Length: 120
Length: 149
Image 1 (tube, rainbow over the protein chains, first blue to last red):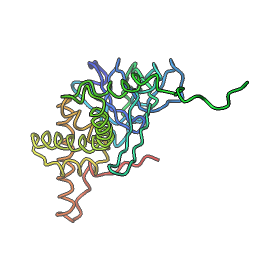
Image 2 (image 1 turned 30 degrees about the horizontal axis):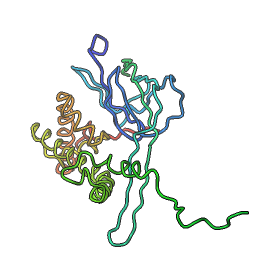
Image 3 (image 1 turned 180 degrees about the vertical axis):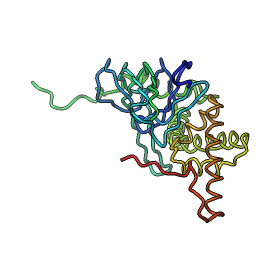
């Protein structure tokens, strides 16, 4: 089995922050929300939908088991987005509103993706 | 003696008019024509630009979803499946990848997409057998539903 032998780079499809991401190791991910973890915390991502390499893929229905895959990430940065301008305007009614929105963002770096072949 | 009212020659006038104007003009510098220089024209153009960008942020979500659907349709036709068949069979086999992911996989991981297309095709055949056979044939392997409790 290839899973017992060698495979190249692994990629995984992970469901995180209500979005699906296709990630590999040494990847940067930016989310548009706050994560309750300090900078430098290691995070393990469960909810893996797909794992693959060059020669094989493991498709979860809908999720893969937690004992099969392990995805580790570290929180790098917690910033705000660039100031986005929200403007509403109705012509001939003297109505205009301008609002500047900065969303909090979090940057994660994916450290490793590992699989533990334990087909029952 | 205390003067209770100010003399007529004393007025309060704007001192930072330059910066208030620059605040608007800085968003118009890349426009075409006189509206990148003249404040009166720039105010109108900048206001329209902001309103358009606010509305476009909602449209972007629709546009991107349509783009992903087009890409998935093209990729699945390469493997001999139409888009409605592909999506419905993937959902019936409990694979919950969304359209953004499927489009990305079709671009960057063609082999994985081929395997997903084969999975959808197999599930489709089993659906046909279950509907047409209607006998004592055993249920297909891919039609079994996994329960996570």
